[in-house]
Length: 68
Image 1 (cartoon, rainbow, N blue to C red):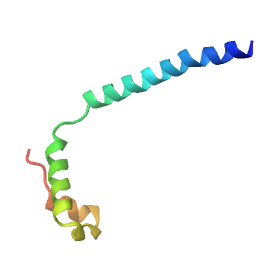
Image 2: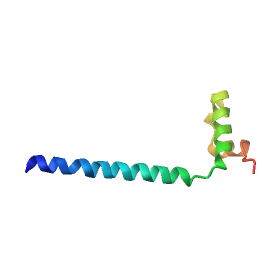
Image 3: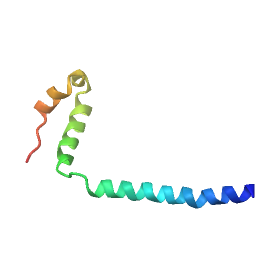
Image 4: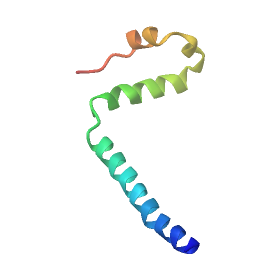
């Protein structure tokens, strides 16, 4: 009977993994794509000038505005 209990965990684990993948796909499809431009600009700026990012997040937001 002990071996049967481990066999039951495999389908439960597969179901949990499937649910996690489905949740991730749902979150990805519902994301706000308007933020992609801002995120890309911020990443490029951070890689070009890493010494500037000892500032606060509010200072950074004043420099990088979305193009809406």
